[in-house]
Structure formats: structure tokens, C-alpha cells
Image (tube, rainbow, N blue to C red):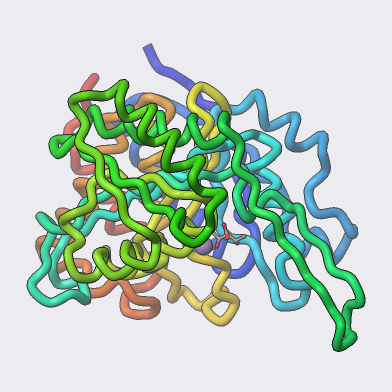
Length: 357
Ligand code: IPM
Ligand code: MN
């Protein structure tokens, strides 16, 4: 029996459309090898659409997305539009309106050549960062008075709810159950931001329900240091929204750069969104220089999420195999062509034997 999945595409701005195109090339290859199919609808949201119509992404569209299996997003952000306007309306809009409370960011090194850390290899860098994705500093509660005067006051409120904190911590423990090292590290700043005591207590309470999982703790500043000094100490980590944003850019460098770092914005059981963690990189737009591997790995995460686990693993094996053989020489922009990398990975996926001939 073949399954069909309903997928919405938001290629977006800058390099978004070209990296999504390569992601779909690899998805096509997976469909022909593994015998499933996708129904794809491309949505126009992003800078071009906003400049033409004044619309970011309408509420009805978020509602229509609820019936889909997944959303694949390229990148959002354009220098012609006010900073943060589209990012907040579309990326944060998806996260908040679809209640995608997990931002899952795997940090996995496939080849020691791509790690900037001395004497660290794939055995040292294999972690899963679970970033809380619907509250914290991103809750949208902010304001300013006396703007532009010497007496200006600006505020941004961090919001932590018991339900919000508990569900992401629980998700992290569940993921750890299926990993060999079975460890979860809480990363917070509860020594200085005392409201984050809610994370400390909830982590201890939920952790008590998982006696087989080892627990650890690091303040965010120390966690940045350990991630460089001893990345092998991390397995699964769970952290508030803003810290998760910051530490996963650091993590992306440890795994080889923004060219490979992918993420899933999940609400288990509901429509979830997959994207590279890099931005729209306008300077590389339409130059066939952007690395599409992060988006291709986001497609791999999407396939795992919808249940095409074998296809998901085949993409990962194709990428790591091509690295091991030295065919992927660099993860930086401009070394390989965008299309070249997409074709290389799609061809490798196609060379797998179909399961059901
Ligand atoms: C990310 C991005 C976003 C974030 C921006 C574009 C709003 O940096 O997905 O990490 O801060 O979450
Ligand atoms: Mn970020």
C-alpha cells in the first residue's frame, strides 16, 4: 500500500526557493525508491508577496495548514522589509498558531573534517537540542515608552507556564529513552533569572518519572563553554526558547556550519514544520552557491516525522556516505553548486534498492 502525504511548501525569501527545490529533488528520489507519494502545494508568503499585497500570512492560511501532514519552509527575511516583521509573522506565526512547542535541533557531526574543534570527531558530537518553541522571550509581550528620547524604557517579558515547560521537558525525556546514552541536560540561567526556577523544579519532577534516564544541568553560559570544550558530554538537552536559539547556532558550527543544520518545529500528532536553521542569506540568492544540505536534512526529519523512517535514514546515509567518500568537499557556500549537491544526494538515494519492487 502506498501512502500519500499532504505537504505545504513555503520557499520564502533569498536562498529559500533554491534550497527547497533541491530538497524536493531528494524527496522525489525517496518517493520513487520507497513507493510513497506527496501532494505538494506551494504558498507564496515572504517578502515579494508582502511588498506586492501588504499581506504577511493570513489567519485562514494557518487554519488550512492544520489539515496537512507537514510544512517545509526555506527561509524568511529580506532587507527591503522592516527587520523581524516577516520572520515574526510567518516563522513565529507558524510556531505559535500551530502550537509547535518543540523545536528539535539535532547536532550531529558526520565527518571530522567539518568540525572546527581540535581532536573531535563524530563520536563526540551527537546531540539533540529540544528548544522550547512557544513561550519564553518570544511570547511577544514587549513595549516601549518615550521612544527615541533619553528617557526611553523598553521591556520584553519572558513567559514560562507550567504546562509549556513541562511538555517540552517531557518530550526531551521521551526522546532520550530511544538513544543509547539516555541522558538529558537542562540548560537554563536559573541562578540569575530566578523565574527559571520553574524549569529547575519541573525538570526534577518529570525526571523522577524516568529512572532510566541520567540527568545533568548546565547554566547557558557554561553550556556554551562545554559545547566547545567537551561536546561529548551532551546527549539530549532541553532549554528555553531564547537559549535554544543561541546555542543551536553554536551547535551548527560544531557540526560543520549553517549549511547542514536542520530543525523540526513539532507538535507531536499534528501538522509540523521543517526548516533549515539558516536564514535567507540574500547575498547568495540565485547564484547557485547556497548549500541545500540543511534543507535536505529538514526533508529527512520531515519524513521521519510522517513515518517514512527508512526514507529518512536513507537521506542521512546518503549525505554521510558522500562525505566519508570525500565527494562532498566542503559545507560552505560556493564550493559545490546548490544544484550539484541536490543531484548528488538524490542520485545516491536512487541508487538504494527499492524495498517493494
Ligand atoms: C531561528 C531563527 C528565528 C528565531 C528568527 C528568524 C525569528 O533565528 O529559527 O533560529 O529566532 O527563532
Ligand atoms: Mn536562530
